[in-house]
Image 1: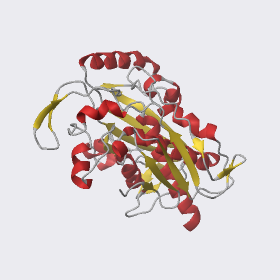
Image 2: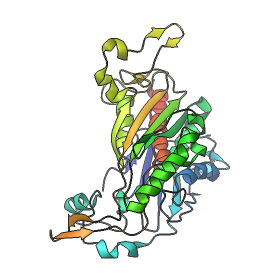
Image 3: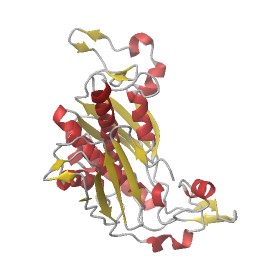
Image 4: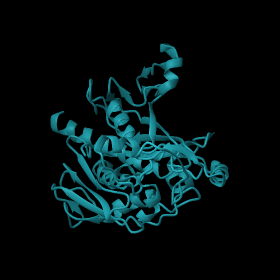
Length: 350
């Protein structure tokens, strides 16, 4: 299977399956002399791990990262950084009864057609658990960018059709659902409980905001910064749409409304979302991702088996009600990986 490496200068290669021995990755291209410890990576992994919150899977994984190479006495050495996260609570037996059935909304059907074989234990590489490697890699990218003042926020704009007011995005990572408004938490909790009781699942919208991004990152044609960010986000399994800046709203505006006036002390607005001509403008990068509902639900669904016979399926096992909020650290990580790649590319060739 190809497509397991992200980046051109700062590269992350991930490996592992949902119910295998573990997952991990290799970060190549990280400069030497960057402060990095297992604890720094663990802080980000702890935000993503299962078993937290009212809507989360009851699967208990500590997601304890082990740095295997590329770090000496708390600093990167410039050599490949290898890391490993063991699976501790995998239950492949949960999937034995449905191993020959294509689950609606999952990658079963397309993987079987493409490869002629698939890991049915939670989806294998198509499982959301694969994203643990992205979060670890993103933590390394964050360590590269942090000394330069770049940081990334990821908060939930909407869950289950209920929008939030963005009153405190800075505090979102310390709040359930990564809510940007403390008043919405109890409302979302009730929505989760209501849908869980019905055996269904929910989607939502996540906004990512990158602050302190310098002017000049990105290339003007195929490697536009916003294009690479959209590509990075769409590579996350549950993401079905991406907006940059005003996004879809811009299609309903006039040019005079959508243009960001440039004043001596800066831009008057940020409809562009922090890029102009595919190159960062120095404003905050603003990206939104539409997250589909978790496809594993307890309701009866029609499908077929490997012999193309009609069957009905109801998913048991352990599943989140929504990919939110565990997807928020993943999207933060993909933003950091993209920015670190462009940062080092600019430094090398700029």
